[in-house]
Image (cartoon, rainbow, N blue to C red; front, side, top):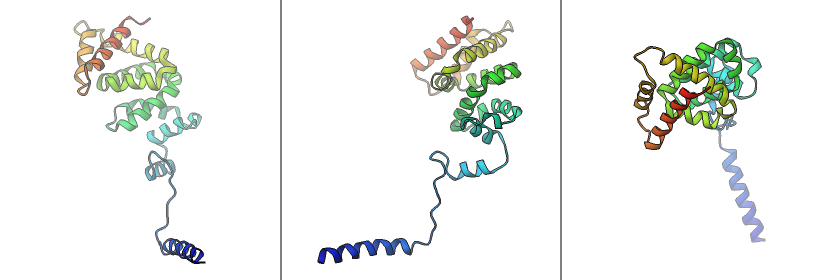
Length: 186
């Protein structure tokens, strides 16, 4: 009998605590972004929302111009968003390559020069299924970058390494090998 009373007392105590709790719990909308994710999805269409739509498999709901605008966003300060933009671009790369190849080359190459290790990591983790497209794009971009006589592949290597301040020796060697493989691609 005393066990039953103790059990009822414990249950009622916990119930009373929850009963007097006046703050309503908000549902977790996203394990990644939470409330910001909810606000973004309910807001007007912009590059971030377009990116999320593409990542959620709704690429047909995104205007072509917004898909192109993703390229401009590859160099935002927030690494989380850069990774998301790369992932979204990887999904629609063929469409962009078909319609705006020069812009894809230019802005992807700029992203690589400013964040070389991150670009290669994304390429290995996300872009591997489109490696031929990425290699074509980056090869053409490298060729255009070294068209002027005073710029060489070594200049590109030095520029990318100077932007890789947190890179260790292996990372730097990987960047050098990547640029050399781009130079010899095709």
